[in-house]
Image (cartoon, rainbow, N blue to C red):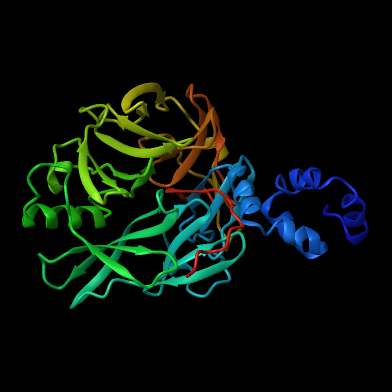
Length: 389
């Protein structure tokens, strides 16, 4: 329970540095309550240094997509604890049309009714993002959201698709600015890519059927195409966009034999999982260390049987029936903490297991809601306002 004004007066008798150490370790919501209790606390918790220090102490947590059945996007803390992310509230009109495109630090980039926004779900603020103005544009797609390290600016990477089939273009927007920059598609090679290769790459990056969303690592965006030959690379290559020099390059994946594979964030490290079996019930996990792929561990869920923990509920008949939850194939994986993983299987369920492959339980993000998807985004809560100029 947060202190009232009498409690605030008692705490203010403590040395200032002690108060700061207490405040910076409070959950984000409690910091907001402190601001309402005391003017001095409001001032202390509103400085750029405090807000940044507070943000850096927050854990990086995975976001789970409930597909609006009935829950939408939630921030998963641990077994039995999760929170519905604003603005993905069920009370929001047309909530099912809200799409999550990216996350960076404490900010989310979303779209709703053909408009794009940046928002901070902790302090419930949002701002409209300008879109590229391209002649005869069919649609604009966000393929990256990141912090530009040299300037500390937050930037959005767009692909514009016009009606003309060979005129896709690449654009960069700095958050808080209305200036949209068109940038050329450059590769870190001696010869620039042909127009055909450029168009092939852009079409692949904006297509979810060709490329899963990017993973940001050390100032670069990384994509792992399902088949890199479709966008100009070798079959198992990874495409990298250096956000500082704004150019692309290819890098090798750790293995050439995977039937299914994805990049993900492992506690701030670029990681890769791949399934080497046609049955897709086991995966090998690698992590990037000193620019070299290092094998970490193997997860085999082929023997897991979790039927007893899964039930669906009919809202009309109030009848609970067991779901078929035998692990038939793996779809995706994210890291929960140093020892625990979340694994999506059978295209709809998510389980928890440790890195030794031991089953820890099913993930449930709502009343009898086990149908969900893992999302590529992670969130570190922040009370920092959205940048503006």
